[in-house]
Length: 598
Image (cartoon, rainbow, N blue to C red; front, side, top):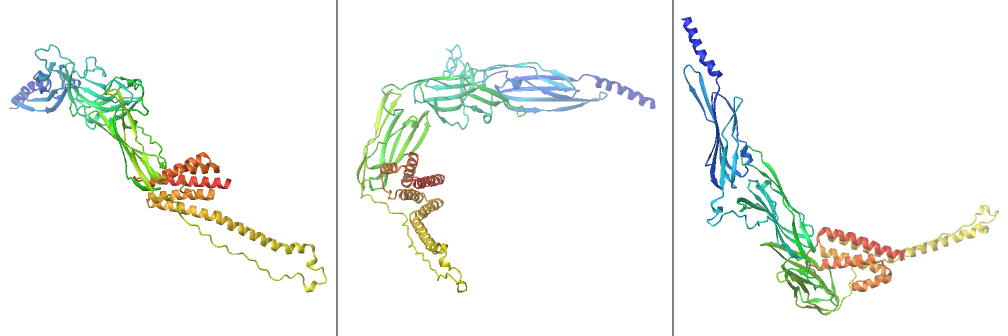
């Protein structure tokens, strides 16, 4: 019995050792269904390894990352495993791994795949190579009368503005390429690509545009159109749209655009590939405007209108003149000068611009607001305002003008009332009292009396002299107080009132105090009231007094700015009021120094 058991064990051991030493059976396949398709049709690509008697360690298809034009729509990995048992042969293990891809071709062409590679028990096994043939989609296929596939007509046969690349390239489109100074040039930069890209990874770089004023139309999301270039399907993404206006004549060059983005096969486990592309420069020929050119002529097509906010005011009050010029073109080129109006002081205008880019055309409106202060009663007329422009469509100069406007100022000019009436306190008389003077003592009468000594006369004269000096000093002090100290107190109170109005955010009261502060400083310096004087007469008076030009210019600018802020409808911000307070303090200090120097 023991012998039979040993014999049975020996017989079982012989085939088991032979099986352990045998090579595993391995099969690697690479198939595509179908192997010929059109752009946009789905393709099932299957990579599979099967092994019996071995351990599968890896399965790779490296060329799938190379063909970025084949977009991976889905990816599935399958790992079925099967065990078989047989008497006398041990346990036989069968295993397999399959990667199944669904591909969506984006570009026509022939795509070669090297064999898939599998590793089983440390040994390399390969499949047969594979060739995919992708033809153009049905709508892009040549018609019966077409013998060749022509490139997209929008790109042009010479590929202007682009350097062709079979995968991706940039193209700069400029329309038109020959313009006048100030005429709009439409610039669009496109990314043409046949590969899959991640929109959030796109980083464009704008081209240099020296010599142009540029208004950008922001692109918030990437949208594409499918176009055909050299028989291949591309996605064309606009990545920049701008309206450019040349500022000088000659040949102006728009630099090459740049872009970088991530491209991948769509496989979650594959790292994206960073792709960079650089475009080509484009030249624009700019012509000068034809002579004779009217003054301040601009390029575009405009209309202009003007209006006053009221037609009747009191003398010394203000009206607002608003002029709106709008149309097609760059409104920031518009310039308007308001001629002088007799009896009216004109403050510097406030200018506002509104621009919009629609359907590739930039248009907008520029508005001017002048504050007109009637300095004399009667009827005042605002002359017509004329605007000249050159229309590039007709290549001719045209003009438009506003209607004449007028307003009436009633009442005589009133002298300004003093802001604060200084009160002179009555001077209190200074008196001095003396007691009886004793010049000698009865105990020393035998000596020389004090009254007979030489210094006694000087001693008696000293108190009256001190009294006279004290009285004279008090008089000088009272006079200085009346002329200087009271004026300084008023000046300080005006500045404190301005600071209080600033803290209370009351612009009108603030600028009232600013005007009163400067006027009071001038009154004290010139010993005469200057409020109510037109600025031209005030300048003449200051010039005669010897004020320097810089101080006079700063003083007049501050008064005009304060007048504008008081009468303007729009408010002013706190930062500007703080700067105005600092400037006013410096001007008042210079006025006072000028007074002390004289």
